[in-house]
Length: 402
Ligand SMILES: Cc1ncc(COP(=O)(O)O)c(C=O)c1O
Picture 1 (tube, rainbow, N blue to C red):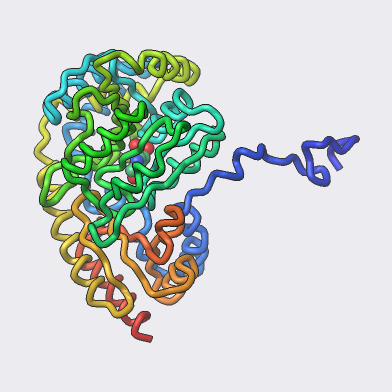
Picture 2 (spheres, protein in one colour):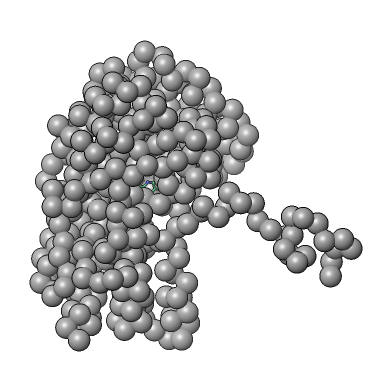
């Protein structure tokens, strides 16, 4: 025994983790454990679980990689806590190009990936007991982190047969005097939904009526197939905090560069911005070398974006057709991002995903890992080349027929 006395913060001498960590779940990572175990025994796993384009044939554009090398040979110190001024300017210019909105570099903060931005915004906005409306199903950190801050994530319905579009009446019903924010993830993870302009405007209108902030996760904004992404930032007089980053649009998930843009022309988010700056100073700076490279990415050629969307569309078409051919599986057509979220006839979707893994060596993520509205579904990526997807779908079909 290490301790001479057994303190109350131990269980039989083992130091207990803080209660808040109990709320932290990440289904996308959880299913990796049994897959690694199978791999260790020699299985060739088809990894359709993780949204990382860099693991497949989507390479970071060369001019951005070169900018990273150059940055590293020039300066390797900290950057300003709020972010490199040149990158904050570049993000503001991108906002003008993309959405026609004028913001200044003071409205932009640079974070270590979008993931840190989520934590920072929640840390600045949510008191214990405050509510945030999140899409159901949702990307798990948005619910886990809300609970981490003792706030309450309240899922709103997205309607599967309407291509997972948010149910505006349901959002209206769930607004309460504790609602601080409405979250949009558009294009959506895990459903691949792309919200129409009408839908985005309706949600922004509800938020404005109710005094809630819109948090808009736009990390997949360049990955759309038929229609273009429409940002709530375009809706006048609605305070919007955009969360975005390098990971997906610039095929550089490992660089960990993200940002937030405050579209707040009436200045009502001034205190929230100050609270963000305090947190940014606490962690000193985001990765300075990669911020230099991000300047080159945002200000340089955007040619890869069209090619990526075309390649993804072809793979989306394949998966949409093939999954709907398999007995017991039906799916909506994703209009953005690189996820598809099929429905499956089963009692327990996690058991289903684990059975598929054991029998076919194809790894998906169970739908209930994205919250209660994901139950009875699974999420697949369509990033790999068609030959890999075809092999995986043939194996799944054989399993389902059995
Ligand atoms: C909707 C959504 N937001 C944020 C992230 C995190 O991105 P980052 O790599 O910038 O931390 C992801 C990653 O998959 C995501 O799907």
